[in-house]
Length: 191
Image 1 (cartoon, rainbow, N blue to C red):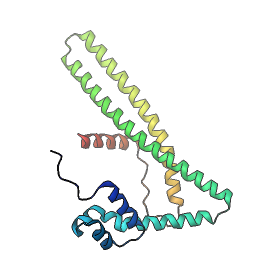
Image 2 (image 1 turned 135 degrees about the horizontal axis):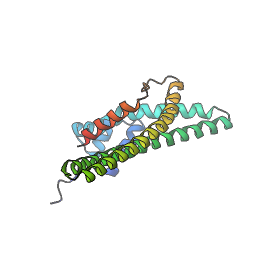
Image 3 (image 1 turned 180 degrees about the horizontal axis):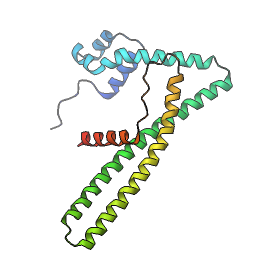
Image 4 (image 1 turned 90 degrees about the vertical axis):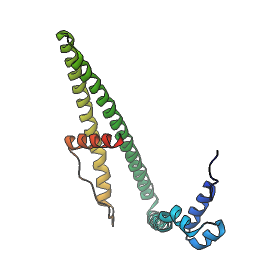
């Protein structure tokens, strides 16, 4: 069974979002696309208020950049591209760190089971030494990654702090212990 036929297709949603961003009246779009008021607002509530505001901000910034001398325009765009790359790198690093923490938690669990089930003292000592070596290596790499991330976070925070009329709050830097707690909390939430 293919399921219920959609009332509105993806290409129609994209068209509605585009036209809402241009300021077209929602009522006109509801009639044109034969969508009930309830369904329309369920699908497009965030776009009705959010997109025109974001579009206006973007237009204002583009006008400000266009008013700058060419050399400064190039510098602003270069800096913006650089900050975007930093944001993407930080997001990627967070995903990799989370994946690594998950893998290491599973390995630690496996090692704990091996140690617990081992009756031979020589094997037990080897398993404990191996577990400690692995934990120390992960801790060292994690600490280095956290330090590297602090540099990128500092750049982003400095940019946010210097932006005029920016109402976003700047998150304080996390200590290594706080970062590890947050990663553990996130891992528990994923399970």
